[in-house]
Length: 335
Image (cartoon, rainbow, N blue to C red; front, side):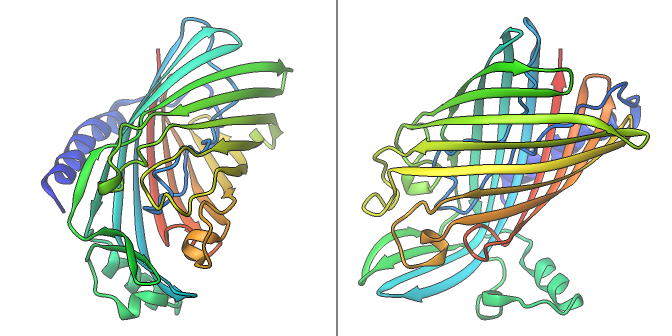
């Protein structure tokens, strides 16, 4: 684990553990989507719409968000003159800010820092698979804890990252408009612009401007002694002329999400969410040319009236089109 990552974990521990030890249960736990996406190194560089709650902040209110995502990749494939190997771990720490311009209009910004590393989870994941008699797939033919992101087409090497790399990722600017609400439902139109602030050589960005437009909705309802919710969304994304596999990237990509949650206690919610997108590249390889389908399971802890902690674990339902395993932490505070 590199020095930057150790520092991040230390800071996270120093911040989160005092909160967990001293915070009171939340008075009303808001159910909201997991803000997750495909973290394959060839997918994370693009600016697809991300699931966000359609319940916007009131006018003048601010929400500060910190996300940490870990993705473990392990796939090897050759087909029709194409060859790919994605073996390594990716970490993304994101600082996000949302502000309510009015009760129906909200702006936001996300500042990500992206690391690609040899990682440390390979042995644990292999042991987990062995314990439950699950297949290790391509892990059995690759070394543990190495970084090898490679792609070639007809012998032409178009992508290579074998040394640890990190930098600022692509900054995202957001605008959301809540155009319809009822006592239990909300409908929002959200736009996003991804700026080319990352580095294509380090796979921390595509070095292109991307644009997305998404419609999201949520319905809340009583469930037992608690609250339940369904949410979903659909986005259309335009991918600019970047520097990551620029000859093969698709111009337009559709994506969507569908999820549900149940809050049996004022301080606890259980959630599950499916995220998917169409193929990002024109390729015969499933890692690049197949639609991705990901499932995230976990929940939310209320650490106070205005502070929430999301914890999620993701699996690739469309095998190898997204990382084998992902872990998601998100701490949000409103003021």
